[in-house]
Amino acid sequence: AAAALWLAPRCVPPLAALSSPASEPSLPRLSRRRLAFLLAALGARYLLSGCIKQGAGWLLAAATPRLAAPRAWALATLAGHLAWVGMAVRLLGDELGFFAPRSAWLRLDWSASWLRWVLCGAAACVPAFELASSLAPSPELGLGALASAAPTITAQITSLDDGLAFALSVFTACASGPFLEEVLYRGFLLRALRQHMPLGLAAPASAALFALHHGTGPGQPTLPLAALGLVFSATFVGSGNLAVSILTHSLRNP
Image 1 (cartoon, one colour):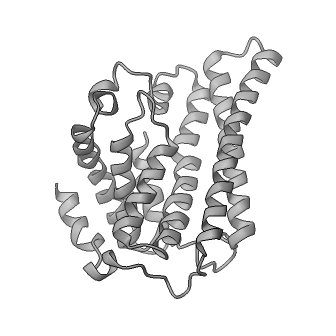
Image 2: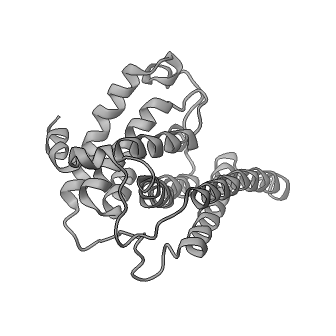
């Protein structure tokens, strides 16, 4: 509650900003056609990374039959994830110059005052997730089903008793995963959508895609994940610093 009270007046922009599209002066404007192309291209690369993960799992099973199952799972997951990171970063870099020095897209500042934002954002994730879970339209999407449904990635990681597998999985979930997802959903998608729709629509749209990216099956609570996406969006919009949402996301994932 204290975190929400601190965040609210700093993250909620003026009503005019919520009700009308707006472009940052330094940000190149994307046409709807080009935005649709980039989203389709990113989606295709995400599907391809899933195939790479499956292929890596089969190769590991065939080439190293003595490899412990948790370690093989962690290595295959890491291979697919790094493929996804590499392809997405390459696409954004080639098409937008996203990671170029002084890029208008990469609003990443480690010298700014970010610690209070991160701590309050991470604290706000808990009530946001709980509230969204209580509002989930189906029991299988809420917290009550998580214990009996198919385990989430986090649950699979915490159940690992192999030290290397655990370390690889934590790196994926708490370092490379949050970095890429915040670059995609807040640094790129939220700001690109903001050029074509009000922030009051752009933020929920990017949060919904963020939730769908994580799956909609049992153990993947879509509505609560969308609520987390809104918290990450609020910390990014309020602070103007992508480092804040990356670290908030990293602290939330364990």
